[in-house]
Amino acid sequence: MSEDRAARRSRLRGPDGLGGPHVFVANLEALELDDHDRHHLAAALRLRPGAAMTVSDGDGRWRACRFGDRIEPAGEIVEVAAPTPIGVGFVPVKTTKPEFVVQKLTELGVDEIVICFSQRSVVRWDEAKWHKLEPRLDRVAREASMQSRRVRVPVVSYAGSISDFAGHSGVAIADPSGVDLAVEHRFVLVGPEGGWDDAELAGGWPVVALGSQILRAETAAIAAGVLLASIRDRP
Image (cartoon, rainbow, N blue to C red):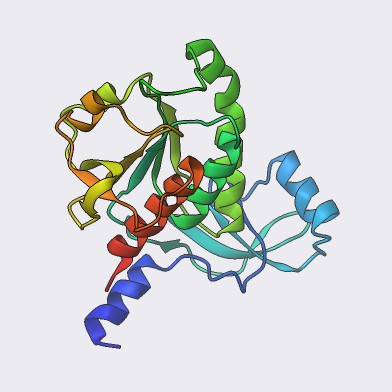
């Protein structure tokens, strides 16, 4: 590995998963777990006093610690450089809960996850439905970030229509007729079971393909996350 590549890996490195479970705290200088996280570590994971763990502030910093009645620091605070952000907007479908897609995109390292809707959407939400589900989706993203040892929790948000993305740079729309995903594409919109209508495909966004197969809508959203992360993390 070249020196430049090694330095880049070092700047981007979060917990490697070998240092025990990972949780989020408000302050890395005053280590306090919330009741839910403490119960999960002690009861579900059966963590014993003195066991290794890692904590993060969710804003790119983390440190090694040891579990107990008081969480004790066991290492210096490490600041991880922010990667180039990537995002996926997906249309909910009847066959798969949006929690599943949010969980998998979080595990893949996607930074912005947007629930959006199209002309051919079968599932329809309004603002009231979104506000009811938002806390749960935020919790799913947080828990998936802990499981995957992320040091930044992705932002999960809602867009009533893909027209909300008009004028945003780096946005592409996924369709089998498109070109290969490339480095200039930083956010991919994935449509519903019936695909995009002609007006949406002609909306001015680059059209990108996610492979040679026809994918289920939820699979396509996850595939978009895989491809975006792979391109971004390429040395």
